[in-house]
Amino acid sequence: MAAFGLWRESGRARLRQPPPTEVYAHNWPAFEVWSAVWRQWKWLGGGFAAPVRIGLDWTQVEAVMRMKGMRKRTRARVMNALGVMEDAALEVIARRAQDKR
Image 1 (cartoon, rainbow, N blue to C red):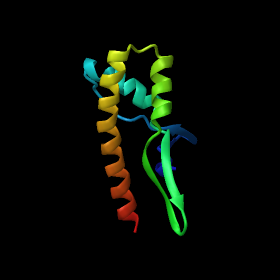
Image 2: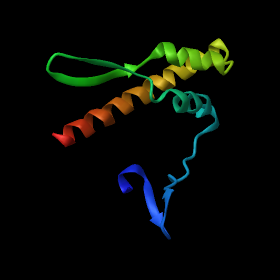
Image 3: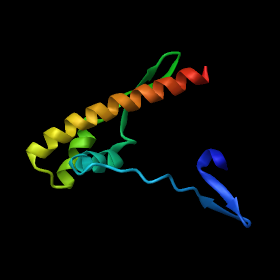
């Protein structure tokens, strides 16, 4: 159960809450979009190799930003921030995959 972030207390399974994280106000729009699209990856796979994440699906990112009513200037800034977040996430994913081998 711990692998899924659950723990037992008096016979009931409960979800373990992550510690609070501070987000600077100027990063909040990017954090909001990341929270909505962090599962929207493009995958490369085929042949004998396992599928690999190659990056965010940017059409989904743009759709979320439009649904949130973000202005074009804000969208450009958020796209830059999401690119940094995407690179960091891909590094962590690659490191975890390497550790499993």
